[in-house]
Length: 446
Ligand SMILES: Nc1ncnc2c1ncn2[C@@H]1O[C@H](COP(=O)(O)OP(=O)(O)OP(=O)(O)O)[C@@H](O)[C@H]1O
Ligand SMILES: [Mg+2]
Image 1: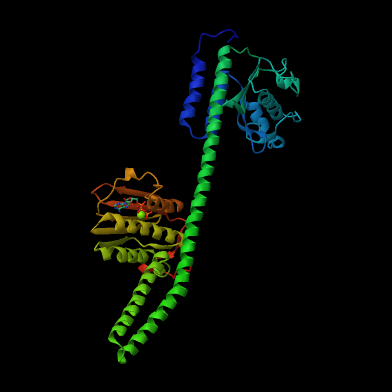
Image 2: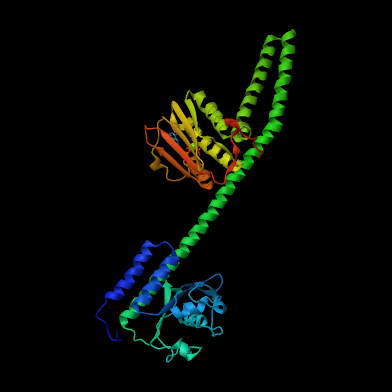
């Protein structure tokens, strides 16, 4: 191929479109860079090539992919060169380091491209200087014969890396060669940029999940603390008050006190008792004692019966397989999930029948809660309504399951009832056998 305009665009277009197809189909940056390097090397029939990516954190060029000649591969296998790793990936300081190894020379060239922020097409490295300041390539002249093409990997005017291609003999570059390589460089730049954005997104999501988990754990701990205080302090005082009132009523009934006064005392005693029951219900909602002592199934069953049967909703609980004891965090989150679904049924569903199913296999636990109520249009709940808070309950339910590494789904339609479903993997969360189903060891306090 000569250096004049080449009317045969085929191979150049093919090389560029191969890289652009990889950009749209490959999610993995490393695979994408490899396609880019292979395409560039194949197009120029180059013996070898490398891609360096600039690492902001370490302020160094990092070798990401390399195509080596057989001679180089053999040399890199030699024990004395194993560390240098021609054809492997590794970090080196930016800038002209000691150029006593071919790998250092490649990096020196990459640094020239980065510094100049432009492409270099050199027909014969042994005869032409490289770099803005016209520096001659350091190293033994015999190693340098052959062509070199180095293009920046650029995205949004920022150079993010370098694609280098080396030939063993001199070569003239056509304008198509230059154009195709520059194009490949820009496509790879976009790929690196995209990978960085995805990485930032992943880190952001991780931070968000950590915070969400922290909030849920803090909320549970606070609920436990309030429940404990209400139980140990307020509930005890209320019981003592009710007992004293009972004794007072008995004495008053036997004395010749005004009957109206006795009746008022009875009412006060009854009020104290009702308040006690109410307080017990609140304590149980805050932290159901049953969850610790009898396990998840019993706690969910009790909560459903307490909240739904009073509304004349028939509740059935079905258990398939042996439900293991799970870690306290997992049990608390699953219980809160069921609590959210049951509270929603009580508040919104107008249901007459609810079926709760817990299904356990070796790998996963599935919890289904289905009602035959009025249902709702899920498409309308796209987030949390800022004014009414509508959607917050479903959001928290989903988040709790997601934090356990599981999936959550809500199915509903107006007039067709509602089903919520949570599925969690069990690999890391077993903690014995659910005592509510016999054969279990006692649950450790939380
Ligand atoms: N089982 C159900 N049957 C009918 N409608 C439901 C059911 N579950 C949820 N919904 C509808 O979905 C909406 C969102 O539920 P979500 O639990 O997120 O919020 P909420 O119950 O309104 O408020 P919060 O749970 O924060 O007290 C509800 O307002 C209700 O309209
Ligand atoms: Mg709700």
